[in-house]
Image (tube, rainbow, N blue to C red; front, side, top):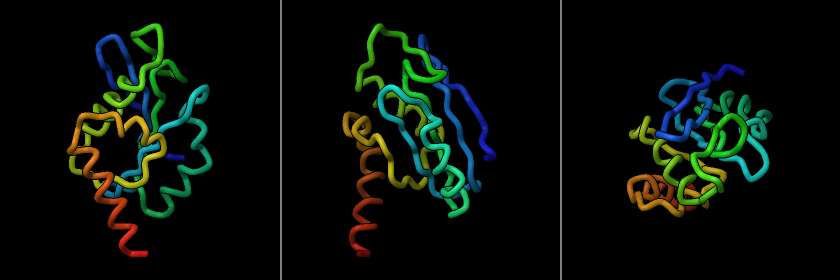
Length: 126
């Protein structure tokens, strides 16, 4: 798997994330569940790359290599973390986002609208 590991410094929190796939391709953001980390998507990443998608997977605060600046996990923090990661590539075409519950908590219509628009486009084709 050919991915670049990066770190986004968000003050008291360092978010570890991995990106890969064809440059300029649509982006799939992969967000793991509780008590796991980015490695849960190891089987899916090469398949997504082979099918022409870029991937961004990350360790949510207090999981894997990412650390939390708080004593507990907060969904609002995870939502803002996703926004900060996506702000690094503001014009990308977004696709399915596992863990979209975090995104639903965003007060960021620009990101939420990109996700909803893509979902509706897919639904109208079926």
